[in-house]
Length: 185
Image (cartoon, rainbow, N blue to C red):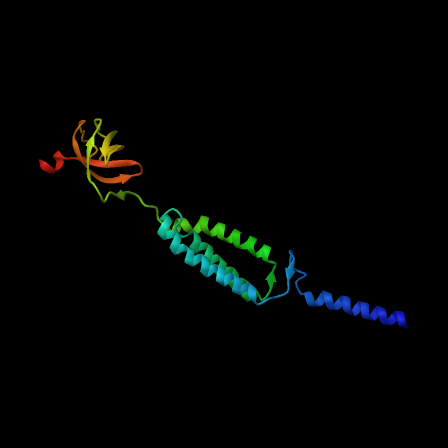
């Protein structure tokens, strides 16, 4: 009779542990629900969104919206964890977040961040040609003490060497110029 009692206790505890986990159907290890995981993802998301201000101010256009997208995906992770009321282990959550962030940055960033075409030249606008600029070709100009590749904005106009030109804008590394005679004739 004693062995039957121990068998019943053993089977009762075994079935309780199997039925209380409730996460046996998941393909990865999980831990019981905790209240701090959605809070963790919320704080992480808000922190990344705040970092976007610093990145935009000091690094400019190159890294624009990356921290913002990572913050939004962290907030999405927090909402998923909160909604499901279960917590997958933190290393799996971080892996999901990194994958979601990578996909979002590669897919959404080009949609929301438009590339800048021509850059306006705000400071000095005068330059001097070092070599002739033939129609449709690139020559060299002396601009702010440095030699720059330059191209004439008027495609069928040639500019001789040692001529004064005005810089209109910069496209990539090439200055777009017009000759001084264009304004004085």
